[in-house]
Length: 258
Image (cartoon, one colour):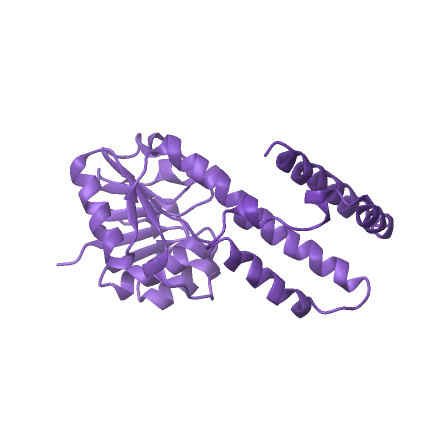
């Protein structure tokens, strides 16, 4: 008989992970979210119960997946009676110890990917990093992970947070630069689609070439003529200008050390 799971959280990660687990044969017993809309939308997809009150979270699930923002752990979890069932958080930056006071059985289940509610992803290709407070709980999480992914690894909290920092640099910060790029194009009513081939090739290149060797552009060679022109055109957008200058210096200094 498959294990039943309750999801505490109904955001991007919770949505994609819970849907994938249901597809893989797990029963999603209940969904909690602070807002009725989010809780109901996900519960409808999973054919499960839902609640917006931590105190109404059922103690009947086998496993509880905590997919909340880090700051919400202390707001929500103390109100739940876990009955010493397996409690698993999905945060890259929180240590395993962050949930040890809520149950005798704890773990971490961290899929390293960017998630959006309505965008399906191929979980088979997503690395999942797990940690647990006992060999038995580790085996449980390995079993769950291998049901959805071909890349399941055990990683402790100390290493996982460095992985999370790296992920913020290569995903979150990079996506912010996409947003800035789009804003720069809007200055001359140019469409973002013009950048898509460049974005794709940049991502593909580092699959085969070390990132430091893939670096191109005026910053790596400190082409002051180009850089000065760019900064002049950005002077009406001081936030973009200062960021451009700071990143340029960072790239140049890094490559001077090589």
